[in-house]
Structure formats: structure tokens, C-alpha cells
Length: 254
Image 1 (tube, helix red, strand yellow):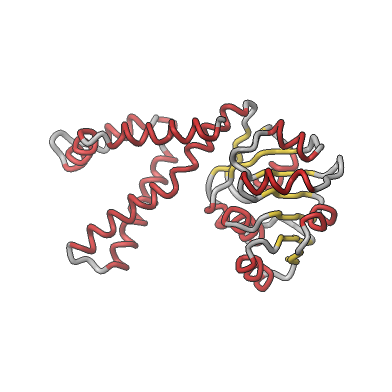
Image 2 (tube, one colour):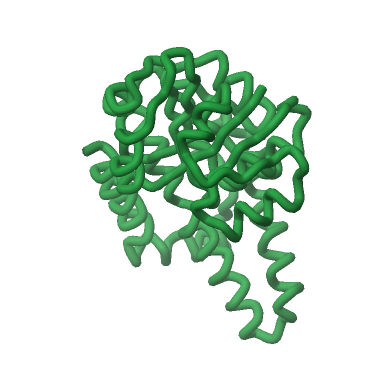
């Protein structure tokens, strides 16, 4: 299998790192030179990677092409490129819908996928729309594949994928608070990361119970967890959180 990446930003590079950390067999990976620093780093680390300056060359030489550019760049460059009818295309572009992608590329073998940066360590969910064998056979080596049959539903997952920065800011705020209280920064970072890792693993193991039950089980009457939760509720933290998701959903659904 020969893969091509048009765009070498964070998601594309994370997929490539994940591929080389997995058992997925690839003969060659062609990447664009748009982000030269990332492209050079990948080219230097992995022998099977070749940087090409021409996007059309990447398409012509690859059996599967990943579209990893921003929506604005995608709308600019994709109409200028030619895709053969049997070319397999995986779009990582957030706001260009499937019908438009098929029209621009003049190709029916188009899939939309929503991997996240932890895919480089073979972790995290990967939303695929529509269900597709060749995309599933790639991403099953890199994370948990979730196939969606309704594009409108996929927008909801795109929306929740936007939680990354907010999640890391919660970790950052917790660690900074510990540091201000005299805890060594490295120790604070490690503690907070391990705490949230444990909570996430526990939530995954108990997901069949429902998260509402986990919220209830993690509190005791007048306890510390209840105090923090109630203070956040009074500050409308969770209402604002849900509102932010709604606003993102409106944006990606246009």
C-alpha cells in the first residue's frame, strides 16, 4: 500500500507516526512539503517517506490519498487537482461535506475521517463516514474505529473533537494551582496527567453504567467532590461548556 498526504499538519503527522508505530504495512508514504519543518522531520526519521513539492505527483503515485489541509486551502487547491476514478480518498477536512468532496474530486471513493492527535500512540476514537472497508482497515491499526451512516451525526462527533484544548487547559489550570501551592511543576504535571488518565480509563471501563452514575458515585454528601461540582454548576461552567459545543456544531454543520 502506498499512501499520500496532501497537507502535513498536526493530524496528518500524527497519523504517519501512528502508522510507523503500528503493524500496518506500507511500501511508501508521499507527503507534501507545505509544512516544510514537519515534512523534513518525518522524512529524516522514516526511510519510507518521500517529500514531493507537487500535490498532483502525490496523488498519481499513491493508492490512498489523505486530504489534510484546512477547509480554505482545500477549497482552493482541490478543484485544480485530478483524481482517477479508482483513487481512494480519505478527507480529514472538518467542514467540507462528502457530496462536495465527491463533486470536487470527481470521485466516489471518498471517506471522511475524524482522527485526533493521540492516534500517533494508537489511541483514541476515529469516526469514519460513511462506513468503508479500506478506511477501516487502515484506522483499525491506529485507534478505535467508529463508523457512522449519517453525515449529520458525524458533525456532532466533530464538535466534541474540539474539546482537546479545553481539556488540556483543565489539566494546565490544575497543575498551575498545585505549583502555586509549592508543588514542583514536573511533579504537579505528572500527578495531574496520571489522575486524568486513571479517571478516563475508569470511565471507559464503566461506560456501560452511564456517566451520570459515575458523577453520582464519585461524590459523598458534603464531600470535596460535591463541593467542587456544585461551585462549577453555580458558575454555569457546564452550561457554558454545552453552549460552546452547540456553537461549534452550528459551524461545522453549515
